[in-house]
Length: 126
Image 1 (cartoon, one colour):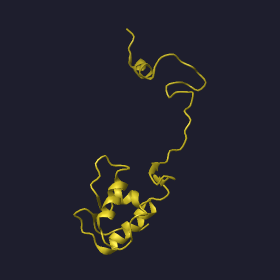
Image 2 (spheres, helix red, strand yellow; image 1 turned 135 degrees about the vertical axis):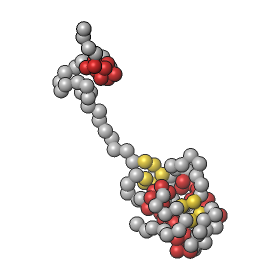
Image 3 (cartoon, rainbow, N blue to C red; image 1 turned 60 degrees about the vertical axis):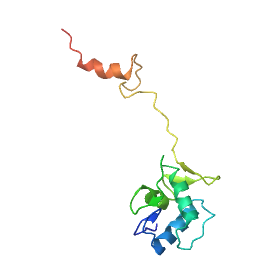
Image 4 (spheres, rainbow, N blue to C red; image 1 turned 180 degrees about the horizontal axis):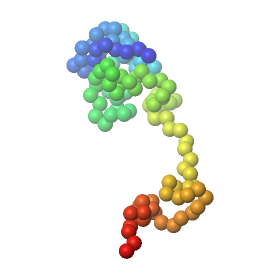
């Protein structure tokens, strides 16, 4: 994992070493059309926005150290992975839901809803 020291992208610091790091990481995430040259030109800015559009509704085109885009850009095996169409997808582990709900005792089928189950203990009988 490589970290940048200054912001990279639109109206950012764009330190040459930081831009090289961002460009190489963007290429690993599918932006094969950019060159790793340390210059934050229009193609690099476009790649940043395309990358951010996978998890932001309104990408700002800036990668800031320690912020969400920087974290996702450095993450190759966790939350984000690259699929065959070079887009990013969130990994989800398949989970089976138990047939026993939290308000039921093991092996016991009860009628009613979860809200009824949580309300019932608080009803006082007069």
